[in-house]
Image: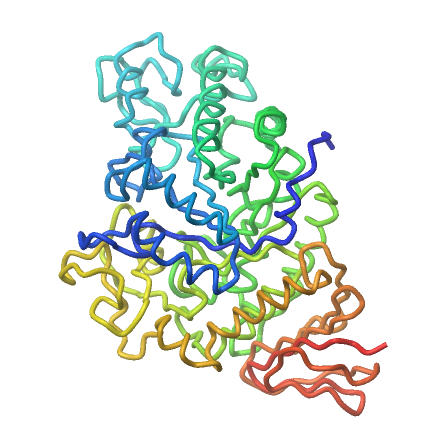
Length: 528
């Protein structure tokens, strides 16, 4: 494994919070969230206990893919404010102990980016991947005077930046090697972009589609080399900054140079089975090609924690001490925890697991109050990816209180970026702040418990005692965790002395047995 500078010490204890900026808080009444709105709610994040905020892309964009189609990497989109507003947000977050990460779209731009407009009219420009004649499969016809077609990286409006091909092919002469002029210019551009925003004070980046850069790259060998090069530059130029990968394969991405990678609903040989085996209940965002499975956090009790545990063990062994694995509750691309048949009453057990397993927890905005995936929304800024895959349901406005628009915006309801959840019993922050028994207070207590108990963090040991219902494991040899995400009572043998209770509901440890009621959970301190 390549030797990198050790990760900043703050990362080991980080609790991430992802903000989809257009849906978090609208300060100016135009119906779209903005930086000033986020700044107004920093006290909520500080009170909750999160210390690292990741913002979805906030750069100039035509928003055909919700900002993942960047037209200017060095300036923010006016809908969110100005570069100075972002700098102000970073400055206001810092005294609260909160770091800000931006989303770096490394593999493609918008067709509206000046780079692409120039490339579409210059046959000698190799910043993008062009086939000079015809239109090979997967390519899109040139919109300019340049003949041929370009390769998109996701939607047709997102042309792939050219980082070269790992393998040549005489039948496809457009395949440039990774050290050609175009790929070299793009690698240099990534450094320029990162340097610009890190100099403003952001703490690092979550990198979109990080595995997609070098094409026809078996085992991502050349893509890994690219990120290794960038990590060495980052270690020298910005030693306190971090890179998080949207890769979904920590055993590859972390040795390549990322400080952490997420378990995702895709990635690796199993196409994201680890995360899907936990949360995916066949509702909300579902790709048709996924094999149906019973997830562990489902009321039926037909799932198992084993697929996740096995994937985590494999990834952890490969990562070693070089980096971390992050576990999200959800994100802007897949369903919230509260989705389909899963109810709010099932969420506490899910958070107990997420906050006590040896990964870095990432909370998607609103999940801390149990916001719902809202089905049936119109396609909004490219949200629909398939007949059963509409990302808009996970992107609805944050629910702050019981006032109109849930306190998100003063705009008329028909001008909101997306409609607020219409459910009459939708949760909100204000109501849950006033209720000590709420999910919000539980999540806050769990974060605080994790902070003061290193054995419950990402680096502590774990011993699985029962890989079923209930799921039982010991952290750091001192803390017993019990999670029963099904509706039925479940039990398993447990011989050690009765532990002291730190956080529990519906779990009893006595007479050599752990008994957990439906949706029960418990965190206990073992007595020596």
